Length: 325
Image (cartoon, rainbow, N blue to C red; front, side):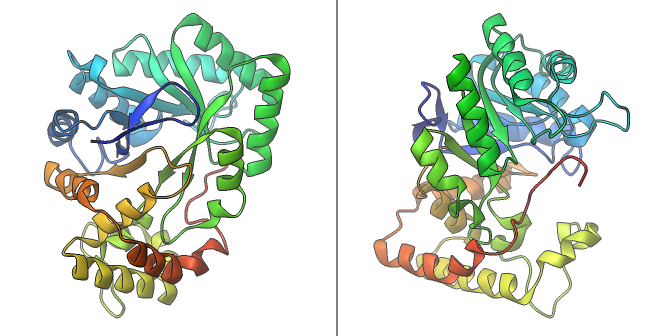
């Protein structure tokens, strides 16, 4: 396993991380714990969750799975997206973040998280309030590092500027949708993160499964897949996306690898990327994702992948979660 610094911080993370959005939802508690055990046994230390995943079940399962192994994990959770409809159940105010951190710590059965991320920008809370609240969390020892997610580049830069001006801890990471099917971060976010020493954590690295090769033109989505269970996902299954998936599968076949592993390996070569979080609903799927660690991409292959995915630097992000959307 390769370990990289998270941005310019002193925190080292496994280049392949584990996304746990499916824990307690598409993966039951027993299976999720086996996935966690397999991940830790194979050197995957970066475990990503959030206070809203599976209605908090993801955090609870992780807390149980880490009993006796907490020291092996770099544990990150998030807050900011809605937990409910009430006036105090979303955002990044001091009140909401303090309440949510305490709840996350209880569910995770730990007294600290390695990385606490603001799940999305809150237009109704001054950034100074958010950053001072996060500073207090770091000072208390309940949070080691802080990060952001789903910010526009200007919002991230503003936050970094405020932290520098006030002498506060800075965001060390930015979690954003990024894949061969979504290269929009390369327009502004990647250059910003390189300049400011912020590590990028891609989510949706397989574009919701499109890059795994499970979808093809003229066929029904596989049973149980996002395309089958989520009607809104159909908008991503356009001709351009399916053509890209077919091309990626062709390159992967030539290398004797899966398209999923190839797509993850490509992300690991991108500037500013610290760790790539890939979800798994079974230990077998986790092992398939780990195959990405064995791929050494030649310059010609990288050039080919860059060429076929270049159009996906334009348009809208594949995933982008905002308050009031």
